Length: 153
Image (cartoon, rainbow, N blue to C red; front, top):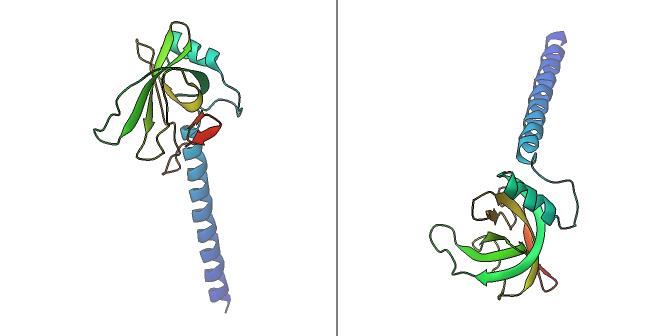
């Protein structure tokens, strides 16, 4: 009976080590994935976008707002994306690529005011914001677009 008790104790310890190792791995995966997220807020931060552009930074999660300058044709190669140019301030425009295989298309027209959350990637012409939708793999917190009091994610 002593040997069986010792074996059960070793098995419990082994299970505990495996569970703790898995939990630690999950924690560090999340730390690496979410390290570029801004502090939790619902406020737009166009200034952070302007800084990211001037510093040529990428992989930055932002909430920005602006006016739709131009609606482009959807990109239907690979996963489909709704594309449009967003002007956040005079002389700063960015391309928004909203994955419409993962989220509903937003009924936009030039001049519409929107707010969005997504990941910014620098480009000399202004950059692109993508991940404006939920992440089905749950690796990112995900993004959204708000238009006419409706959230598309």
